[in-house]
Length: 167
Image (cartoon, rainbow, N blue to C red):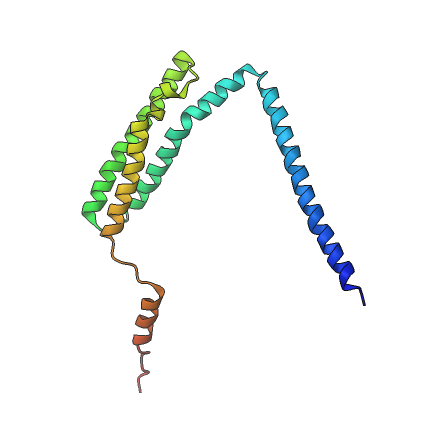
């Protein structure tokens, strides 16, 4: 029979080495990223690629969100709320597509690297989009019927008596 203390010592050492290995691998990854990013500074086209990526993030994010909500809204049970939501989502979607197109045109004309000059980073437009998503979500939630919890569903199932077989 093996000694309990040797098993405990082996387990403790394994946990310790896993912890040390995790720290060492984390430091190695951080150093690798530091040197890779330092090497990318020597590629002049990379800063433009990074600027294009940063410029497109809000527009692509909100366009995706509005398309998903637009598709989900088509199955909403209340027709009034459905049409209000579709109209507002369509307006917002067209606005974000316009912002994306204007930002891309502005970038290729000027090559500006400051995000404050792009329409996608307008604080009023960003906050209005987030507020609209939230308010329409609340409006849609209030216009749907209350979902039954598990206890109510179980009570309903118990009330339904099984059908009797014909004699």
